[in-house]
Structures are given as structure tokens and as C-alpha cells.
Picture (cartoon, helix red, strand yellow):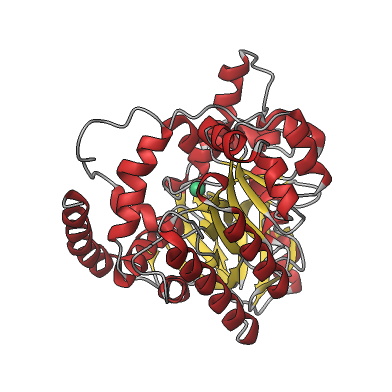
Length: 445
Ligand SMILES: [Zn+2]
């Protein structure tokens, strides 16, 4: 397929804008990128997709999400409004997740994947919880991912919230799914070993998870110091800080994803850097839960690979970029903090680096040899769009609602805003029935 006449934003090692640009891909891989004149000469017989008046860029990556949370939209939380992070967990998320069946898990994922495809997000790193439907839950989600045609890495969040049996079942689900994937590799699926957070993990469970993950040769995916409550709990029970505890158990390392890291001090950030642990930043979630602001500028300055996720918020990663751009300026009361090009490096280069944990081929770039994950957007710049200023166009002018075409691994998932792999009306209708039943079970808890 030859995409022609677009404003191509390449990203990759040397991001550039090619006006009247073209991208040629065959099967699942990009083979050539250049001007339309050049590429039409080189590939005269290729099938063509005209991108006149559109921007062409790599599919977006979400470095941390929760497919299981979709049915929370619009749900009234029984009782008084939660006044802090622990109450939000106890009154909302730890009730919703308990109410989920395997079918709920699958439809919740399908709903998120429709949203992702519509907004140009082709790769998602998920973190799943369904304490009353653990066994087989990752298969149910994997089936949704297979139907959608996106890339996703899955894990089950192990926790001691439901006693020893619950923790054991979570460990078993991670191990079973990882082993299955290792024996039956799927081009679009990846897996890591999921852990909830230090505050719900005993010494025994933490040690068992690390031993299992090591034996399987995979990294871990865990929430780290999202709220001060995680640090307070760790100091009280273990007389050390969260990152120190995780380091002691061997959780950290170049394959591990540490989510949030809002309340980590300089020593902990240095440990994250030294262990080459990936960190993910989810500003919308942090603001919504009022947990605080992660010192992302410092972590980036230290050379930590800070990637951008959405923590279950809408799969419109453009909005996450806009919020990341704004939040740190206000927090620091300094308009120079977190310039748009830094946000772009986080959302593209750093997310692509994190995605390499699961996929061999480069993602997040339009360059020969990269995966054919490509999106087209209706965007008509009324000021010059250049190599130097495209990040500011993305922050101030572009949004996921402008996405018209989504291609993942060479497969067209959305064409002219028509979804080609998922039956949106049927999925939404079934999800609405399932969500109503989930709400009723939550209300009865
Ligand atoms: Zn999360």
C-alpha cells in the first residue's frame, strides 16, 4: 500500500515533516518514506491511498491502561463521595473489579479498543483486575484484542486484597497466560507480570511474583507511590520507602514498568535510573485522584525512560499529551517547563522504547523497517508546519477526533472513520446490558 499526498510527520530518530509526503508499506512493515513524486515513481503498481489534506503519522502508544474500568463511566458511587485516594480505591475500583465476569472483562476491553482505534491508538499496555473472575480473564481480553486487530500487552494485577487464594490465583493467571504466549507467539500480543502496588502486597507474595517472573523471563508491571498512602504504608510496615522495597525484592530492572512514581524522592528516582526501570506518567488520572504531580521533568533529566499512559482514561492519547504539556507548567509556575517537543519525545520515542519490551520491530516511527502502524488525520494547518514546530501543532491544533484512518500491523482497522474489525453498535448494545448488571452488583456490595 502506498499512502500519498499527506503531510507526513515521521517521528523516529530524526523527526521531520514531509509536505506532499508518501509512505509505502508491504504486509506488516514500512519499506519506504519520502516524497509522493519519488515513491510513485518507485512503486508505480502499488495500491494507493490518497491522504490529500491529511496528516500521516505513526499509530499512538498508550504505556499504561486498565481496560477493565470502562463500565465505571457514569456510575454513581454509593455513599458519600470519596475524599482521598484510598477511598476512591475502596469505594469505586475495588468494587467494580469484584463485580466483573469474564464476559464483562471482554466487553470492557472491546469498548476501550473501539475508543483506541477511533482515536488512532494502536498499541496499549494493559493492567487487569477481576478478583472474582481471575482464571481465563487474560484469554477473554486477548480475544477482544485479536478481534480489534490492535497491539496489546496484558497482565493480571496480583494483590493480597483477597487473601492468599486470591494472590495465588493472580500469580497463576499471569504465569499461565505468559507460558501460553511463549508457546504460541501472537504477532500483536505481549505479556508482563502484573502486580497491584506495594501497599497490597505481602513479603511472601512479592517474593513469589518476582521468582515466577524471573523463571518466565518477563518483566513486572506495578503501580509505584501513586499516592502518599503507598509510602506511608511501606514506611510503617517495612520501615523503608516503596522503591527501596521493590529494589530489595528484585522487582526493578530494564524489563519492569513502574507506574506513576508521584511520591518518589531523589534517592528513589536515582534507583529507578540505575536499574533502568521504565516509568509511566498518567497526568489525567493523577489530577482526577488528586494524588499529586510526578516530577517528570527531573526524571527525564536524569535519563529515566518516562513514557505516557492513560490509566484507563479515554484512549485519546492526544488529550493525555495536552494535559501533560499543561500540568507541569502550572505546577512549577514556569511556562518553560515541559515544552511540546519533550511531550512528543515522551509520547513517541519513550513509549516506543517501552513497547520494545514486547515487540521486536520499531514502533512509533514512520521509517523503513518500522511496523506498519499508521494513522491519518484531517488537519489543515493555517500556519507553517515544519520539522521544528510540529510538536506545537500537535498540542494546540490536533486531536484524536481528527483521526480518519487507523492502520495496525498493516491491517486497516478504520477507513474514513468506519470501523472495519469491530461491530460498534452490537458491542455497545451488549456492553450497556452488561454494565447495568455490573452497577447492580456494585450497589449490592
Ligand atoms: Zn493504573
